[in-house]
Image (cartoon, rainbow, N blue to C red):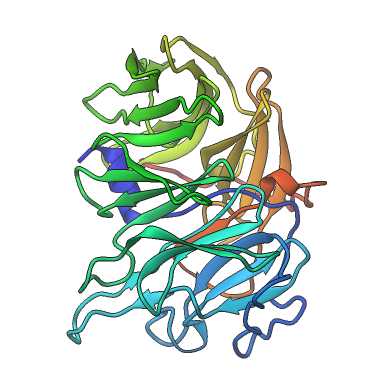
Length: 373
């Protein structure tokens, strides 16, 4: 298993962005109990969702036994239809969380339905639902797969979760048409109209990555450079219309990876040609993943930041930036906040294409020691 797979296994986070900062105590939520249930229709676009931790064991149980869904308008709902967390049958079995995803425009959510383990997509405005041709295997605990929207109309279901050789099934939501991608490859993009696929063989320590472009029945492969400057290329990639981007971390030292982003790299997915620029993010950003494109000039970066004093760093995706691929200039799109503890980084965000204005950035913290220091 390469190191990027290990990182995904350690903290599975589904990412996008929103255009507002919404505290968990806003608009109908109660910090002492559950917020009201998500209505069948008319909820509005989703801003983010998360699992909270409660009790002495800090698990998503009790008042935290449902996904929290927050709309762009600031309403906070519980969503009991979606599987949130499931314990194993034996007392000492570890529990597993349910999968959840939000579309880039925030109008749809995908989840494992608790009642029958089927993957379902719901339109939050109309209430229309689509039952997809995939469900959790009988006897599984939680969701043994991950969910991710590809643009707004498709869903990538990667299974089995934490496998050395996962398979991604791409489903067109409205038609239900499904196709399996080649094993071991990550689906980055499906172009509307042409159907051109961009897939990734992920780079890691000791192995080079490759882009695979599938169009017209032919596959073109392009090798990813090993390094950007002196830094190893690894981590999350995003692709759109023949270009891919990655935020290169400082490095993976033996005592723990230093994920500080030092380069924003952009590639041709058909030739592998790379350009790089320094991302101009706040100095207290200690990790940032490239998660999507905003047009042709900017990518979306989901980030975590150190906080002043002895406070813990924020969860990855709490801060979302647009970063210019030519200049490296960044602008804050959103700042996600909640008064509840997020369970094991289970923060799911969406709706970044609906962003109208950014959020206040907050105080910049003095960076602490990272990695080996």
